[in-house]
Every structure is written in C-alpha cells, then in structure tokens.
Length: 98
Image (cartoon, rainbow, N blue to C red; front, side, top):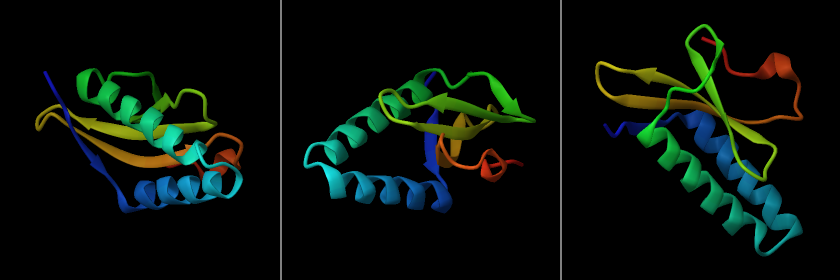
C-alpha cells in the first residue's frame, strides 16, 4: 500500500538549505543529494514503519549524507508527514518533537 508524502515547511526549508550548502562546495553534490532524497521518499511511500524515536516521531537516515528525515505516519489516511530533514551533527535538542 503506497503512502502519500507531505513535506512540512520546516523540512522544505531545511532541504533547500542543504542543497544550497552542497552547491557551495561541489557541482555534483546537490544533484546527488536530491537523488538520494528521492530514494528516501520512495522508501517512505512503500514502507514508512521505521523505529519510533520520540513518541510517534520516526526517523530515516538518508544514505551517504549526514541527514535524517523525521516524520509521522497517519495510517487512517495513508499519509506520511515529513517534519524535518535534520542534519545529524547539529544540537540534538533541536530535533523535531511532537
């Protein structure tokens, strides 16, 4: 069963900031980040039931990049809401919590 992905404004801004940052240092890195991010979204569409990190917030590590997608699942609507694309080296107290 496919889940529909919704990206919060916070997550969208964090994704854009990551792409802008990678663009400063490499021509290929932003495109590679987007490709890996699309793969992560595809994984969430097919099976979003990853380990719960805090209450009902789950996380999926993005391959090859120091970011994780934090998200919640609504099984009634078959939706996944991405709360944050969090850089794993940041202050852990700023991770998204509900």
